[in-house]
Length: 208
Image (cartoon, rainbow, N blue to C red; front, side, top):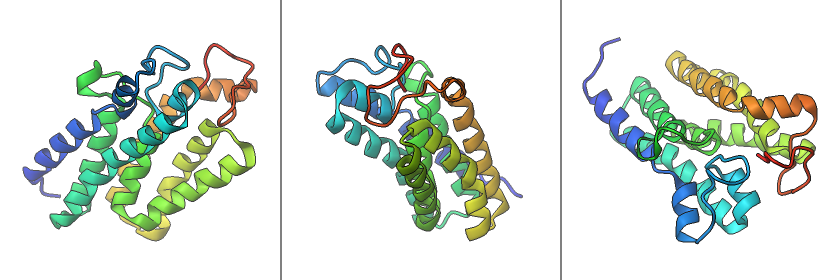
């Protein structure tokens, strides 16, 4: 594989866009508490939903998805190949996890992950979202839904596209997403993880 210097441009733009924290900016504009200082201290849609309400959470959700979607779509329009798409998607995802503008302390990457998948192939993105939706409908636990969906994503890409570089990129993002949910995994094993749009939780100090 020949490395094209333009890949660095894709990566830089995607990372800088991914570094924009929709949760922090939305909560600041709406006069809500900084999501890094309340609930799970996670600047993501689920924490914003529980601590700031549905409107702020919806804005955060779509903003975080767009961070992954837009740079990948731009790369698509530039006739970029799968290698460039993989680099662009990973960079946007890493921007959300480790944002330049916020001390490299970001969210867990779920919405941005789906945005990247939708940008690569809308069928792949919708399939991964469908897994999340099915799990959420059955168990009503956001973290569990995200973990199962992230685990299934590489297999979805393998079945629909088959691109080795895209599968590898998705494995990397899925692994990082799962690692970012280490505290959720611990609570899932303990049976104390909170439900979606619910304040019910055994561990009241750390809702997702």
